[in-house]
Length: 163
Image: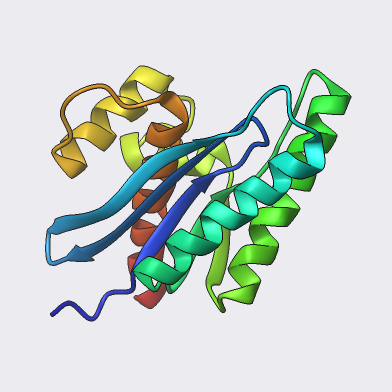
């Protein structure tokens, strides 16, 4: 049994939230869950936040998540979208706090650097590295790929910080 923590990687949003839960044992990952919470565009914003919180709570409890990596927000063209995503991020953080999950945040630059060695890598390069690291095949939604990348980045950061 691995002594490494069970990690959740999160790509925050209010429309779609990418989630990835896994644990690294030696050089191999055990993926426990990876998915995208997609809220109903026609639903009231607060109902959408509640749906995110409820689904996240179920996953955190089911998989006994110990640590989280979450992508930080860095810029938005649309201010109202930025506010909604920021509020959703707050809902997500609140769920993590309730479950006593240790939280770290990473910028998109840090995530790309961690996976590809280049902080300005494009999405295709990041996806390629995620698929190689996790031995993933088949279609996976972009938000979920981003969450998987955050999960991998968090594990790399954990190792570096222990040195």
